[in-house]
Image 1 (tube, each protein chain N blue to C red):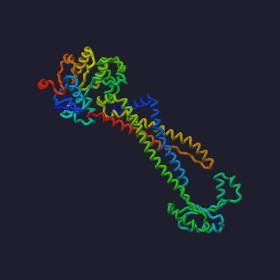
Image 2: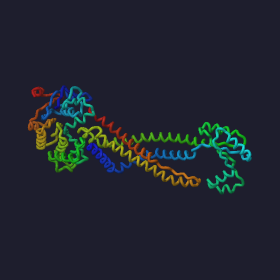
Image 3: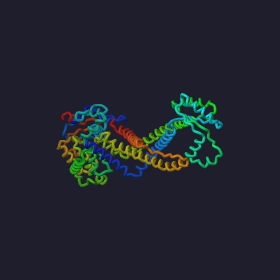
Image 4: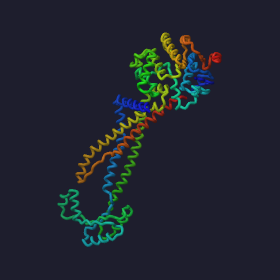
Amino acid sequence: MKVWLSQHVRTLAATLAKLVRSPVASLLNIGVVGVALALPVGFYVGLANLQGFARELAAAPQLSLFLALDASGSDAKQIASRLKQHPGVRNVTYITRDQALRELVARTGLADVAGSLHHNPLPDAFVVDANDRATPTLEALRDEFRRWPKIAHVQLDSAWAMRLEAVLKLGRLAVLMLGTLLAFGLLAITFNTIRLQIMTRRDEIEVVKLMGATDPFMRRPFLYYGALLGLAGGVTAWGIVRGGVYLLSDALADLSQLYGAHLQLRPLTLEDSLSLLLFSAWLGWFGAWLSVSRHLSETNPR
Amino acid sequence: MISFSQVCKRYPGGFEALKNISFAIADGEMVFITGHSGAGKSTALKLMAVIERPTSGSVLINGQNAGALRPRAIPFLRRNFGLIFQDHKLLFDRTVFDNVLLPLNIVGYERREAARRVRAALDKVGLLAKEKAYPITLSGGEQQRLAIARAIVHRPEILLADEPTGNLDAAYAAELGELFRSFNRVGVTVVIATHDENLAARLRPRMIALKNGELARAAVEAAA
C-alpha cells in the first residue's frame, strides 16, 4: 500500500516536473484546452444569469387590465366588483392613473418627462392575481376579460417570460451542442498530445515493457499528464470566465444604472466550478487513456 | 525451468525461424544457444521472454505455458528474467543510476532499498564510480556492463542474453564471461545466444546449436 502510494506520488511529481520543464509547450497546450472550455462555460454563465433575471421578474404571473381612457370612476367600480365576484380571481389591486404615474416617476426617474406632460397619459388599471396560475387558465381569463366593456387591453405578463424561457431553452441546447463538440475537441487535443509523447518515449516504453511493467504502470504517467493538462485547462477556463464576468459586470452595472435598475452578473457557483474542474480533468484523463491504450495494445506479442 | 516442446515459429510473410524444436533447460544451468545469424537464436530467446508467441508447440517457463499467457499475466512472468540485448536498449535521457533503477521502480521497491540494490549491481559490474554519468559518455563495453547491471538488479532467476559480446574486443568479452559465470555460481539460470566460440571455450556451458531453425546437435541433446 505504501509502495503503491509512493509510486503514485512519484509519478505525479515527475509529471509536474515534465510540465514545468517545457513551459512554453505546456502553456500552449493548457491555453488551447482553457479557451476551448471557456467558450461553452462562458455561454453557460450568461444563460444562467439571464435565467436568474427572468425568474426574479416572472415569479408570479399576473394579469394587467388597462381600462379605456374614457372610462369613468363608476365604470371602474363596476369592473372592480365584477372582478371580485369572478370565481377565477383571487385578488384584485386597483391602480389609479395618478398612482401609476407617481410610481413610474419614482421607479424610473422620468420626472422631467412626466413634468413636461400636460395630462396624464396612463389609464386606470387592475392587477389581477388568479387562483390558478397555470398558463392555459391565465390565457382563458385574459381572453374573457378582453371582451368586457371599457377594457382597452389585457396583458398577461407571463407571456414574455414564456418567450424568454423558450429562447433560453434554445440557448441551453446550443450550449450543450457547443460543449459536446468542444469536449470532443479536447479529447482529440489530449489524444494527440499524448500520442506525441508516446512517440518520443517509444524506447522507454519498449524497455520498461520488456522488464515486466504492467500496462497500468506504463499508462500511469500519461494518464497523470492528461488529467493535469485537463485540470490546468479547466482552471484557465474558470479564470477566463471569472475575468470576463468581472469586466462585464462593471459595464453592466453602468448600463443598468442608466435604466434605474440594479443588475449584477453572478459568476460560476462553487458547484459549477468544481464540476468544471472535475470534468476537464476527466476529459484529459480519458483522452490520454484512449491514446495510451491504443498504443500499448499494438505492442503486445503476437 | 525452461522447456520447449515441438516449437515452431513462423513470422508473418512465411519465414520459419524455428522448426519443431524441443529442449529443456534446468534451473541453475548455463546454456549457450549457438548458430549462425538467422539460425533462430534470437527467436528462441524472444519466445522465452514472451516477446513473441510460438506458432505451434509449447514453451513452458517454470511450469507456465508462456505461449498461451494472457497479456495481463506476461509482465509478471517477465519479472523472472533479466534481459540483456545486443543493442543494450539503454535509456540515454537518464543517468547510469536511473537506468539501473528502472526495473526496481516497476516492481515498486522502497526508495532507500532500491538505491542500495542499484549501487550493489553497479559495484558488481564495476560502474559504481559512474553512477551519475549518462550512458552516452560510456564506452561500448561499459554500456554492455550497464545493461547487465540493469538486468540483474532485481535478482532474476533467469538471465537471458542476446549476443552480449557482439561488438566487444576479446578482453572485454572475457570479462563479461566471468560476470556471467559468477551469476551462474549463485544459482541464476543463464541462457546466452551467441556465436562467440572463445566465450564458449572459456565457460564450457551446455550448448544448444541451431541451424536454419532446427537443432543441429539433436543427438547431443538427447543424451543430455
